[in-house]
Image 1 (spheres, each protein chain N blue to C red):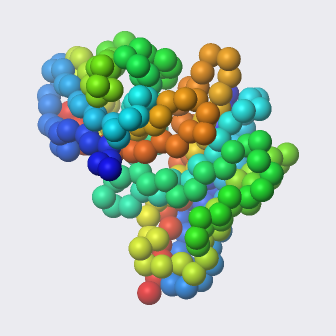
Image 2: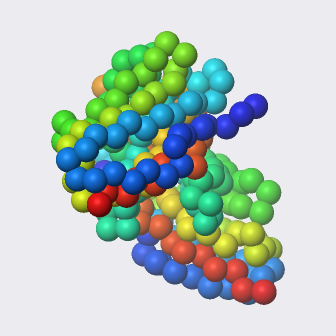
Length: 114
Length: 117
């Protein structure tokens, strides 16, 4: 069974640009959640999608948005990039039943904002 | 607020030794799960072990076991017969469920574990 796939692995953008990251969950998983990892703040929850609906959201500005498609693949978009958005962005998938939860992570997208 | 505290930023042990990583957490929810994740240099977060809060029995996975003390809100990870491949960042995390669903995993800052040959 294929794992969680994130593309691209690396991205370099400049301030003010926007970026879209992609995450394909494990087959059969309906929940996809996104996390930001930085040396200073550690790992922080961005949002979670389940069956194409955002179910939960962390404490991030509206520049961070996402969506989920009918095949459970998810995209995350960051608009008007700032230097502080440089981070490793991880997505995780799970069955999504809110019980017996096991979250499986992808290898992440390393975003550098110059 | 929900928090996870890992008090050991870095630990180093010799191969084949046993090592225990500490974790304490705080939540007002009763329904939650606790996890230990391992993040090697490849950056992929790998699930090491999981514990359901309603289960009193400590979870074990081969060389990995936990000491779950619910009243003390403590969740330590013990690695027996440590191997070079265990070298990684280890993150303690939990996810709590309330009527409105779950707010995602809350992570600690991590412990960098180094296994010396």
